[in-house]
Image (cartoon, rainbow, N blue to C red; front, side, top):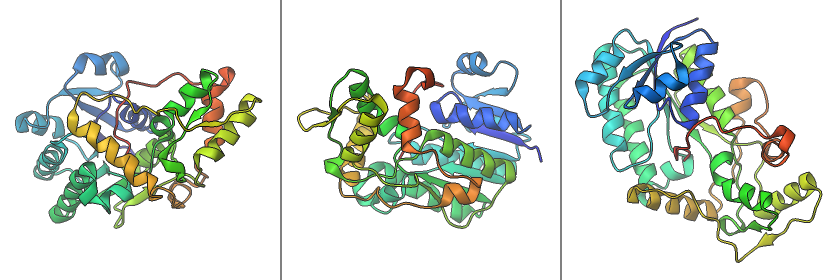
Length: 298
């Protein structure tokens, strides 16, 4: 069943993957962007491009005209809640039937007093419920592509791996699983009463990861406790602090629980951590980056 779908964040890493899947499924896709040239470079005439901004209601209403469903994704910043609520309100007024939102990780939502990003997402989730719109909320755990970037960089440089999260285990999720669940939920218009918490099939510590990397590279790989695992730099002070808060929560073991959500929605196991590491570390299997990075992973 095809539908008209509006995608926000379509030029970012996750948004590109979701957009590609929707196009493949036969949906009529429109992307809302402040950078139409970039969207046109990526998608050509495969999508309808609507230039607009969360703060410009007129542009939102134009973008939402004729839309059945929309995918809600925006970068972490201090205006996330205000911007997403504005789009939800516009969607309700435009008669949109279904919304799929990428939210924060469950441990940021449940600890929103200690996570500014979690507090923003929690506010948006509550507003979705208050408006009574058909929706699904997706709460991905720590993304492999973001959380493990310092690990991949160290391994490719021939170094031992930086210690991460005070040795706490993490059930990392691959971005392709997030995109598959989002696209499936959008395409089917699934109204889900409880948030979809996405994790990998198993939690791994830094030592576990070092063992996997050693087996893949066929050389000894250890943990360097002195190495600093730098997170991607952020010009936005709010986002930078949010990432530091993520690390503190993960170090408490809050990202270790495992769910079966990916398997229930997609009918297959999540992408394994070993497969991800092989794709990144073995040249023949390494995949190019799909798009510019973003930090919408918590």
